[in-house]
Length: 360
Image 1 (cartoon, rainbow, N blue to C red):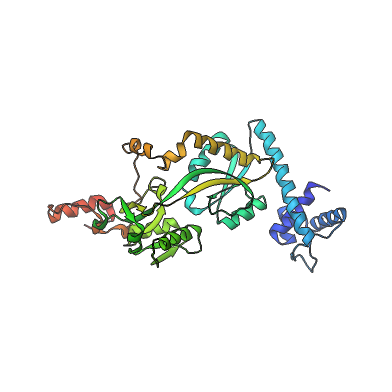
Image 2 (image 1 turned 180 degrees about the horizontal axis):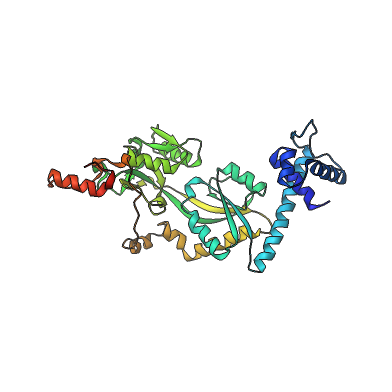
């Protein structure tokens, strides 16, 4: 049996079509079919359910096990090549990573370190839920995954904690919230909210907290995009719940402010997961070693504001760049002006704050 036969098998399983699998393997369809038939003869059991044409009719029970072994064998062969390259300080290949959408601002910090250390490594990030991450790790389509430790049901995996994610309420920067830095969950429940969809883990976690404080919240707007919810706050009267590190990474939109959610203060530990086994794949190993260094130095936690002692020292140095203004952000109630100013002074102040989109 040959490696190419394992590649043919995995290609058919993933493409679910013999013709597309042949194209992916750069062979003719008869060559691919012949290679798979020879493989079945060698191993002594049928792998695929037979039918007419090039359609994929599924795997036999034995075929399911063989496909899993085929993925494992190909993954280890690729890992062997990567490890030799790493020993030569010339790691090549693709780091395939799964992550929850709320972690997108954190990834550039981690992955920049990978690119600096291994400039020939390509990085492929997939945003997905825990079920898709588990499947990706099981099928060796992912090298590692970034998700919540307490709620992750990824099977038997290695994991290393990275940071603790707290929550904030993003609100319009209006007089209603002037001078405030905190808000209780009960107070937040009384506000008109934009929230993530109820099928998402982050939303279920938030709903459980509202339930804990005796509140039943019905959002005005739902979306799968946290960025879209942040724009809702910038452009309308709505508020939304965001990870607290969004205040620094990527930074808040103009006309909004973030209040710490308290009573209770809740957090979730985020960790890096990778396949359990005696051999750690080189791509996963590269990222794990970088995470360990960041944990030891505390650099990532400082960037996220998780290290409270570092916050005071950074206040005078950190500047959050405002996003370009759009017409929907023009809301006079969000522009702080003095009550003693003349009408003309107030109009000029608003113009300077809001930029060229304001109509003089």
